[in-house]
Length: 86
Ligand code: SF4
Ligand code: SF4
Image 1 (cartoon, rainbow, N blue to C red):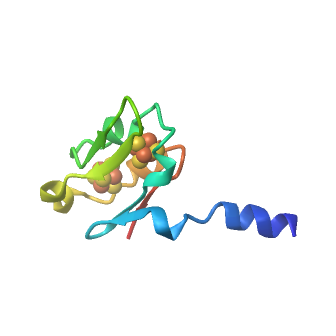
Image 2 (image 1 turned 180 degrees about the horizontal axis):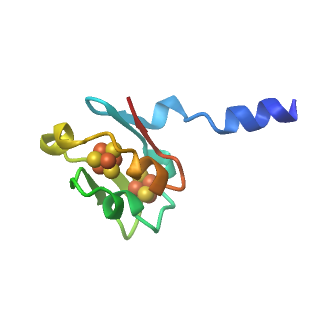
C-alpha cells in the first residue's frame, strides 16, 4: 500500500495539466515554485513564468514551441517535475 502511494503521488494530476502541441505542464506544481528553472534552462526560450510574485504559472510561448529540440534539459531542471514532453 505504501508503495502504491509513492507511485500515485508521482503521477501528475490530470486536471491541472495544461497541454500544448507536445509540451504538458502541471501548473499546480508551479504555484509554489521560486526557482523558475524552466526559463533559465531552456536555451530556446520556450517558457515564460507568469505571476512570479503571487501564483507562478509556467506557460509555453506557443509561437516558439516548434523550436524545441527535445533535449530534456528543462524536464531535468524543474525539480517539481512539472514538465512533460511527448
Ligand atoms: S515548470 Fe517547474 S521550474 Fe517552471 S515554474 Fe513550473 S515548477 Fe517552476
Ligand atoms: S527540451 Fe530543451 S529545447 Fe525543448 S523546451 Fe526543454 S530545454 Fe527547451
